[in-house]
Amino acid sequence: MLEYRISVRDTTMRNMMPDNKMVVYTNDTVVRVENYTQNLGKQVAIKHMHNGKSYLLLETDFGKYALQMNADEELSSEPNPNDTAKIAEYIFAKKCFKREIIGRKAKRMIVSHTDFEEPIEFLYLRGYSSKIVDTYKEISGLPVRFSIPMTDAVLDYELIKMSEYTPNRDLFGIPDDFEKISFDKFMDRLIDSKENMQE
Image 1: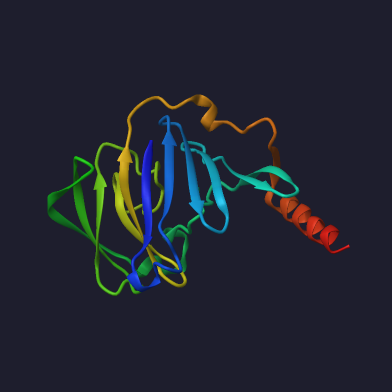
Image 2: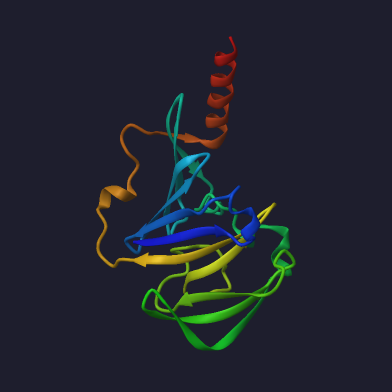
């Protein structure tokens, strides 16, 4: 189990964008990512690391749904920088010496991007699959401190807790009360629900 604190890099924006968290569970085959936001509440994504099959679990006013996602769609609700046209704007440089984070020695990397005001130090742990937190394919390990540029801000992710145990297998399944549905069908239901509310 990994718990990350998510904070906006620009301190003047912290009143508008308070800290959030992301919790990740894995059994080395399946990953469950729980994101918490003030506006949307809890969002859960479940992804099989080897076959790429994944679901986004959503609880709505018109039902509970497990949206089937394409194999190349990102697990987290945050956008994957590797999927944007700006991939060429990233520059990764490995650095010597290690830095300690949550009592573990992490490798360092300096990352530059056009949306970063200055290069940012990323940290990662070797010996863990990069697919657990699938953000930057250039990092050969588990990212434990990294940043993602968004439209209005840069978000900093930092690992604040790590527990190694075997999570309950129920965490990685689709609950019985969730309907498996394609994204297109979900959008149809969403439109129908809005039309019904207006009547």
